[in-house]
Length: 220
Image (cartoon, rainbow, N blue to C red; front, side, top):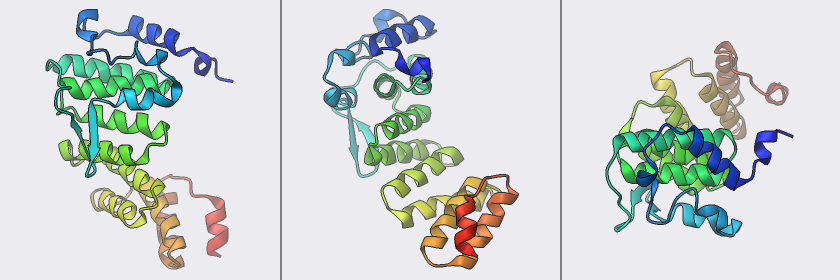
C-alpha cells in the first residue's frame, strides 16, 4: 500500500501548508471554507461543502453571488500548486477546496478549472468535471490536455457523440495525438465500423500509444 495514501487528512493538510510557498496565513482565511475545515465534516458532506461557493450549470462553472473573495493572481496560482500536490497525494477533498478557492481569487485562471476537473473526477462527479474542463477551455481554447479530459468526461457520462467530437477536434490540430486515436478506435468499434476502428488503432500505435490487445482481437 502506498504509505502516502494512508496519511490522515488533518496531517495531510498540515503537510501541504508547511510545504506551501503561497500567501500568508491571513490570506488563507476563506470565510470558513478551507482545507482546515472540511476534515471535521462527515465524509458524505465533504464534497458539498468543498464546492459550496461554486455553481455548475450549463457546462460552466461560476462563482455564486456572495462567495467572491479578494482578487489575487499570486494567491490563486499558489492554491493551484497546493491543489495539484493534494491530487498527487490522493487527497481529493483538500484538492477540491484549493482549486475552488483558486477560482474565487482569480476567475480567469484556467489552471484552476482544469485542476478542479481532475479533483472532482476523483470523486466520480462527472457532470461537475465536464463543467470544469469546459470552462478551462473557454479560457484557453487550444489546450489539448483539457480538451482530451473533457472528452473523457463525456465518455464516462455515456455522451459518446460529444466525446468523439472532442477527440476529433484534437486530431484536427494534432494528427499524431495517440490517445485521441485510441479512443476513436474504441468508439468506432462500438459503432460497428471496423475499418475506421483499425485505422485509428494503427494511428494510435504509430504515435506510440498502447492500444488494448483485446481490441485487435475483436477487429479480426
